[in-house]
Image 1 (cartoon, rainbow, N blue to C red):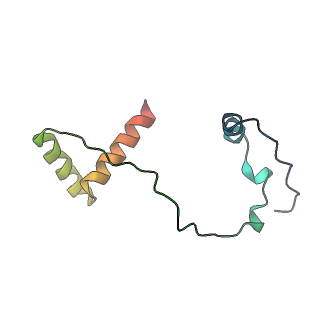
Image 2: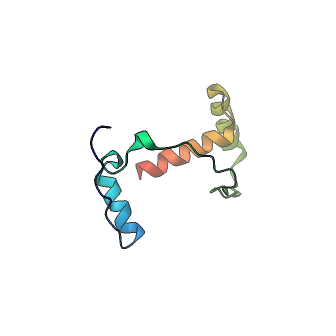
Length: 88
């Protein structure tokens, strides 16, 4: 990156900042060539375990579909849910 990065604006809240970064490239404001790789080993997971009851037939169909894709059925369910939520 040859040009000097622009000065980052000051935001009143997280929502304002989120809207800004949705429409601006971070490479205009950050010199990523100077970035360093770091490890954050003590981060807490951002997932939550849930229970869901499915009819046995549906669960078997999901397991067959997962087996065809060579993925765990739980992962396939997560992928399908993520796709469905993006489509909504």
